[in-house]
Length: 335
Image (cartoon, rainbow, N blue to C red; front, side, top):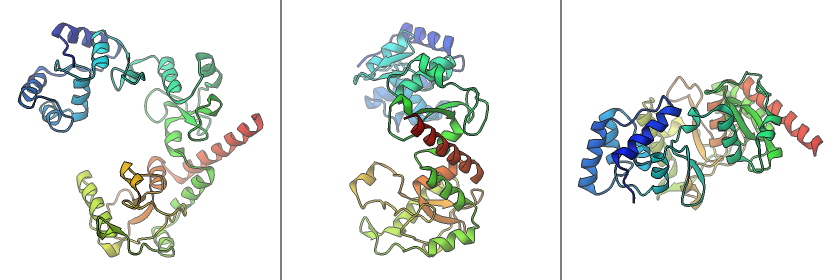
């Protein structure tokens, strides 16, 4: 545990503001409340105490928790390496596992572009250098042709051409929007998703009805379909999205009508507890402007839903798929 002095906190703030003018220190009334809660509970937790401090100043609890981790609240913190780096005005620090991290979660925004790109490149690929960055740098996205700009969808982003391979020969520089559209799909999957998006709502539902349906699925000893519907209802209400679905309003297909893969149903395997997988069942709103209402929802895989949510149109998905095919062909020829 470590507690920073007022002088150390001020030195850290001064150094951060010098390289990132948009960074704003925690208001004193929030610091005072954090100390009162710490004295009362003997700790600072992400969900409870940090949420109360955040409500006072209009911040989310994650932002308050990040300030506590770096010692900026002046409370005892177990994140010693991060707090010491903040007090010394450093940009990076090494965690107990020896991994290099940023003192501020959004630090990259305040760094020169080349430095930010090099840091991103090192985290994704092995044996990279500034010379390698210069060799693959292009001013425009080779996928969609947009000119790179700092921040937003047009920002340069490093993509693993083949997912999971850290070799630098597998690195490609494309824009952020193309990268999140591609995700870890294959060109064929991208084309199938684009074709799916061109169908009418009636055709989508008709295709789902033609597939084998979920039968006898149980979750927590209850009807699994009702449980899934209940969880989606809670998530929709929390997000402020209309929800009026009943059990009969959903076509409970056993596989994804867009990609044809069988759904991984929650509770069937232990791995499902770690979060959604690419083949997890997902509720897709055919028209995103409408809520979860009858005739506007079809079940697709988490992977397909994510790609459709990131893409702006089927044409963009096809453009990414065509570039992906071309890049794979170029890689095979180079090998």
